[in-house]
Length: 165
Ligand code: ADP
Image (cartoon, rainbow, N blue to C red; front, side):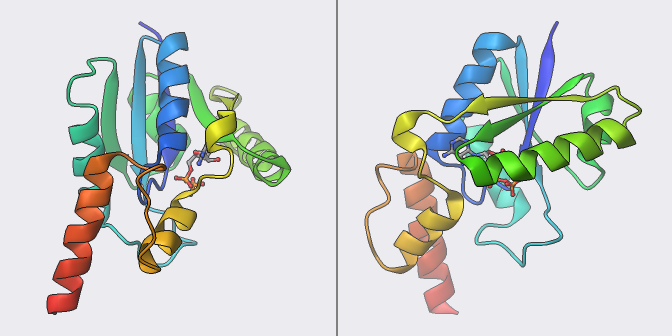
Protein backbone atom coordinates (compact mmCIF):
# COMPACT_ATOMS: atom_id res chain seq x y z
CA UNK A 1 0.00 0.00 0.00
CA UNK A 2 1.43 3.41 -0.94
CA UNK A 3 1.38 5.93 1.88
CA UNK A 4 2.41 9.54 2.07
CA UNK A 5 2.66 12.02 4.92
CA UNK A 6 1.38 15.60 4.68
CA UNK A 7 2.90 17.66 7.53
CA UNK A 8 1.91 21.18 8.49
CA UNK A 9 0.58 23.44 11.19
CA UNK A 10 -3.04 23.36 9.93
CA UNK A 11 -4.04 26.20 12.29
CA UNK A 12 -6.69 25.94 10.97
CA UNK A 13 -7.00 23.51 8.06
CA UNK A 14 -8.19 25.45 4.99
CA UNK A 15 -9.80 24.50 1.69
CA UNK A 16 -6.32 24.97 0.18
CA UNK A 17 -4.90 22.25 2.45
CA UNK A 18 -7.92 20.09 1.67
CA UNK A 19 -7.32 20.41 -2.05
CA UNK A 20 -3.75 19.17 -1.55
CA UNK A 21 -5.12 16.22 0.49
CA UNK A 22 -7.53 15.38 -2.31
CA UNK A 23 -4.77 15.54 -4.94
CA UNK A 24 -2.63 13.29 -2.72
CA UNK A 25 -5.41 10.72 -2.21
CA UNK A 26 -5.62 10.46 -6.01
CA UNK A 27 -1.94 9.48 -6.10
CA UNK A 28 -1.53 7.42 -2.92
CA UNK A 29 -3.59 4.74 -1.16
CA UNK A 30 -3.26 6.50 2.18
CA UNK A 31 -2.57 10.11 3.10
CA UNK A 32 -1.43 10.78 6.66
CA UNK A 33 -2.02 14.37 7.75
CA UNK A 34 0.55 15.16 10.44
CA UNK A 35 -0.24 18.14 12.64
CA UNK A 36 3.18 19.39 13.66
CA UNK A 37 4.22 21.70 16.44
CA UNK A 38 6.26 24.42 14.78
CA UNK A 39 8.87 25.70 17.23
CA UNK A 40 9.30 28.90 15.18
CA UNK A 41 5.65 29.83 15.56
CA UNK A 42 4.26 31.09 18.83
CA UNK A 43 1.25 29.45 20.46
CA UNK A 44 -1.44 28.86 17.87
CA UNK A 45 -5.11 29.73 17.66
CA UNK A 46 -6.10 26.08 18.19
CA UNK A 47 -4.11 23.64 20.32
CA UNK A 48 -2.54 20.70 18.48
CA UNK A 49 -5.22 18.40 19.99
CA UNK A 50 -8.03 20.68 18.80
CA UNK A 51 -6.57 20.78 15.27
CA UNK A 52 -6.29 16.97 15.19
CA UNK A 53 -9.90 16.63 16.42
CA UNK A 54 -11.23 19.04 13.79
CA UNK A 55 -9.35 17.38 10.92
CA UNK A 56 -10.41 13.89 12.09
CA UNK A 57 -14.01 15.04 12.13
CA UNK A 58 -13.73 16.51 8.62
CA UNK A 59 -12.26 13.26 7.25
CA UNK A 60 -14.42 10.96 9.38
CA UNK A 61 -15.82 9.17 6.32
CA UNK A 62 -12.54 8.92 4.39
CA UNK A 63 -10.75 5.62 5.02
CA UNK A 64 -7.75 6.76 2.99
CA UNK A 65 -7.03 9.79 5.21
CA UNK A 66 -5.45 9.45 8.67
CA UNK A 67 -4.60 12.24 11.10
CA UNK A 68 -1.67 12.09 13.50
CA UNK A 69 0.59 14.33 15.51
CA UNK A 70 4.14 13.93 16.68
CA UNK A 71 6.98 15.86 18.16
CA UNK A 72 9.77 14.08 16.27
CA UNK A 73 11.31 15.21 12.98
CA UNK A 74 8.91 14.80 10.03
CA UNK A 75 11.27 12.30 8.37
CA UNK A 76 11.24 10.13 11.51
CA UNK A 77 7.45 10.32 11.69
CA UNK A 78 7.31 9.42 7.99
CA UNK A 79 9.51 6.35 8.52
CA UNK A 80 7.54 5.32 11.62
CA UNK A 81 4.37 5.27 9.54
CA UNK A 82 5.87 3.54 6.51
CA UNK A 83 5.98 6.58 4.21
CA UNK A 84 8.76 7.17 1.68
CA UNK A 85 7.55 10.62 0.75
CA UNK A 86 6.36 13.91 2.21
CA UNK A 87 3.69 15.96 0.43
CA UNK A 88 3.86 19.75 0.45
CA UNK A 89 1.71 22.34 -1.28
CA UNK A 90 3.09 25.11 -3.49
CA UNK A 91 1.26 28.41 -3.85
CA UNK A 92 3.97 30.83 -4.85
CA UNK A 93 7.66 31.39 -5.47
CA UNK A 94 8.15 32.12 -1.78
CA UNK A 95 6.66 28.71 -0.93
CA UNK A 96 9.02 27.19 -3.50
CA UNK A 97 12.08 28.79 -1.90
CA UNK A 98 11.12 27.44 1.50
CA UNK A 99 10.08 24.00 0.28
CA UNK A 100 13.26 23.38 -1.71
CA UNK A 101 15.35 24.07 1.38
CA UNK A 102 13.15 21.89 3.57
CA UNK A 103 13.22 19.04 1.05
CA UNK A 104 17.01 19.13 0.89
CA UNK A 105 17.36 19.10 4.68
CA UNK A 106 14.86 16.24 4.96
CA UNK A 107 16.71 14.25 2.30
CA UNK A 108 19.97 14.76 4.12
CA UNK A 109 18.77 13.88 7.61
CA UNK A 110 16.95 10.81 6.31
CA UNK A 111 20.02 9.47 4.46
CA UNK A 112 18.27 10.01 1.13
CA UNK A 113 15.33 7.82 2.13
CA UNK A 114 12.50 10.36 2.39
CA UNK A 115 11.59 12.29 -0.76
CA UNK A 116 9.43 15.41 -0.99
CA UNK A 117 6.64 15.73 -3.53
CA UNK A 118 5.24 19.22 -4.10
CA UNK A 119 1.73 19.61 -5.46
CA UNK A 120 0.45 22.87 -6.92
CA UNK A 121 -2.28 24.81 -5.17
CA UNK A 122 -5.64 24.97 -6.89
CA UNK A 123 -6.02 28.36 -8.62
CA UNK A 124 -9.03 29.14 -6.42
CA UNK A 125 -7.05 28.66 -3.22
CA UNK A 126 -3.65 30.00 -4.25
CA UNK A 127 -4.02 33.01 -1.97
CA UNK A 128 -5.51 31.10 0.98
CA UNK A 129 -3.43 30.57 4.10
CA UNK A 130 -4.23 29.72 7.71
CA UNK A 131 -2.81 33.08 8.82
CA UNK A 132 -5.10 34.92 6.39
CA UNK A 133 -8.10 33.01 7.76
CA UNK A 134 -7.11 33.87 11.35
CA UNK A 135 -6.64 37.51 10.38
CA UNK A 136 -10.05 37.77 8.66
CA UNK A 137 -11.68 36.03 11.61
CA UNK A 138 -10.08 38.47 14.05
CA UNK A 139 -11.54 41.31 11.96
CA UNK A 140 -15.00 39.67 12.10
CA UNK A 141 -15.00 39.06 8.34
CA UNK A 142 -16.50 35.98 6.71
CA UNK A 143 -14.17 32.98 6.31
CA UNK A 144 -16.75 30.61 4.85
CA UNK A 145 -15.18 30.58 1.37
CA UNK A 146 -11.86 29.39 2.75
CA UNK A 147 -12.66 26.78 5.41
CA UNK A 148 -15.16 24.00 6.11
CA UNK A 149 -18.24 25.04 8.11
CA UNK A 150 -16.95 22.97 11.05
CA UNK A 151 -13.76 25.06 11.20
CA UNK A 152 -15.72 28.34 11.19
CA UNK A 153 -18.00 26.94 13.91
CA UNK A 154 -15.05 25.84 16.11
CA UNK A 155 -13.34 29.21 15.65
CA UNK A 156 -16.53 30.93 16.77
CA UNK A 157 -16.77 28.68 19.84
CA UNK A 158 -13.14 29.41 20.67
CA UNK A 159 -13.71 33.16 20.44
CA UNK A 160 -16.69 32.89 22.78
CA UNK A 161 -14.63 30.91 25.30
CA UNK A 162 -11.76 33.39 25.11
CA UNK A 163 -14.18 36.31 25.63
CA UNK A 164 -15.66 34.64 28.72
CA UNK A 165 -12.25 34.29 30.38
P1 ADP B 1 3.66 24.98 7.69
O1 ADP B 1 3.72 25.74 8.96
O2 ADP B 1 4.39 23.68 7.70
O3 ADP B 1 3.91 25.79 6.43
P2 ADP B 1 0.91 25.06 6.90
O4 ADP B 1 -0.27 24.47 7.60
O5 ADP B 1 0.92 26.56 6.77
O6 ADP B 1 2.14 24.51 7.65
O7 ADP B 1 1.04 24.43 5.46
C1 ADP B 1 1.28 23.06 5.25
C2 ADP B 1 1.58 22.82 3.79
O8 ADP B 1 0.42 23.15 3.02
C3 ADP B 1 2.70 23.68 3.22
O9 ADP B 1 3.38 22.93 2.24
C4 ADP B 1 1.98 24.83 2.57
O10 ADP B 1 2.72 25.41 1.53
C5 ADP B 1 0.74 24.12 2.04
N1 ADP B 1 -0.39 25.00 1.88
C6 ADP B 1 -0.89 25.90 2.76
N2 ADP B 1 -1.94 26.56 2.25
C7 ADP B 1 -2.12 26.06 1.00
C8 ADP B 1 -3.03 26.36 -0.07
N3 ADP B 1 -3.94 27.30 0.03
N4 ADP B 1 -2.93 25.63 -1.21
C9 ADP B 1 -1.98 24.69 -1.33
N5 ADP B 1 -1.07 24.38 -0.39
C10 ADP B 1 -1.14 25.05 0.76
